[in-house]
Image (cartoon, rainbow over all chains, first blue to last red; front, side, top):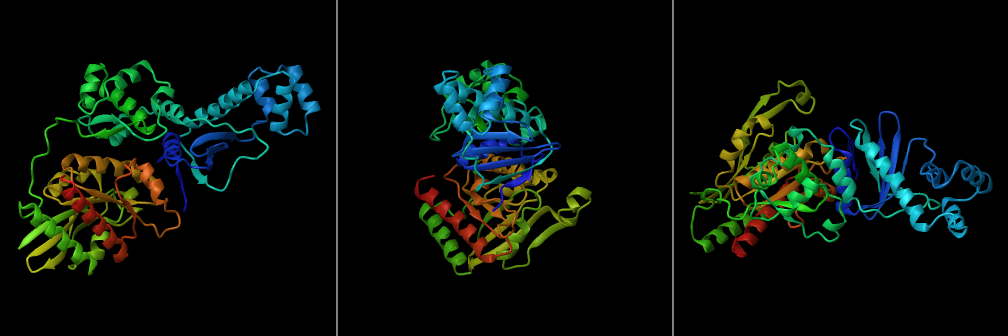
Length: 271
Length: 179
């Protein structure tokens, strides 16, 4: 079934979060006001990206990032016209022009720049196609999405939207136990690190904001980014006053309560 | 006569009234009013403004009441009152309207803050072509893997029964683990 919708309702950051958490493989197609972007993922990691009709061959990417001079670029175009990106990459490495690491770093920069452009899109439709994978002849990367998610979350500025995401600051935070989530590999700002240093189920977000001298908007924005990146989760603060006790069952006896639930189960099964 | 209650909550037009209607043995006592907002009217004609009320009689001295909350945020003052003393709650989400997921998450957090009772999420309208997959809805709602999210077609009594049963199993599990 479809993973599709409108960017007004579901931002690129939220989509990246979803792809990351579900470790999805496939291509996210985003139809913006003027052009269409295609971002491919393998097991929740960024693999490849292209936007509109922009020339995105390896030679052009290396030329744009000044790894190939104008002359070298012309030569490559003439001599390697029929080569795939993978073949061209191998040729350049073997010729000593560039290292494999540099090729991957340049591709990573180009693909992440495309995603940064998408962060500015507020109108458009998206769909995720499980069956569409990047072309075999293109060089794929494997980039964790957490940094991009944090970066995209920093751009969310509307207090109203953040209040919907985090309705109360009386909750606390704890680090997730999700495999693969690694705080060390995420680039955090000074303010973000300050918040991270106070993360403990004993501290409410309000207390963290006070300690880190952040206002409500700032703490919400930082927490939203950490939540989106799957690094933390909201929990009830330890030591917080428990909600006032209310009678859920007509009896105080534990065994009678269980019997009552079993009677409910029996009744619903028989309906 | 002993009574217990469960709450059915979720965003506007998620299918809460329909879900209660599918299993209630009485005609749902509904407080629906015609919508005045033009944008909301494009989704449905009438909405619940105070609560829906359904009933399942277990035997001669036990009754389960199902309370449906109003989905629109301007009626959220009703939520805390309705949540008092509930055994658990069901969050109904329209799987075809990702624009409501953010609100669903907010409602879920609010109810969790009112009462730390067990809850399940019903990914409704799974019979429609443009419904998001249940696991995608889970991720969009940032649900803990331990929380049950179940496929749902609110008009289909069997899927609603499964949702009620799963909530009851969660309640039982929590009681048995000393929660």
